[in-house]
Length: 95
Image (cartoon, rainbow, N blue to C red; front, side):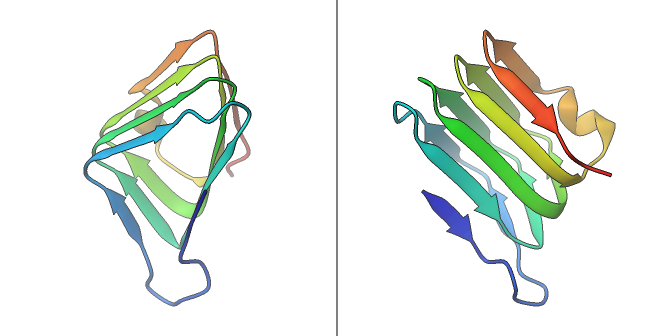
């Protein structure tokens, strides 16, 4: 699954609901110029979530259970405070 709006000036994506990435070994990528998670993201079952935005924020909740989250781009350290890791992996490649 790909949420992609990259390449358009001023584009953005706001999650104010729930994103569930739970396909066994699947890939879920968020690509835009700006992403804001204000809702819930649940990643599990060996799935991989990649947030590939130059600027993103998380005031909602991200739960990783037996899965992988890759955080790319610039973000405030406070965005990490609402990530719950239950036997998952996460990495950061931000500046």
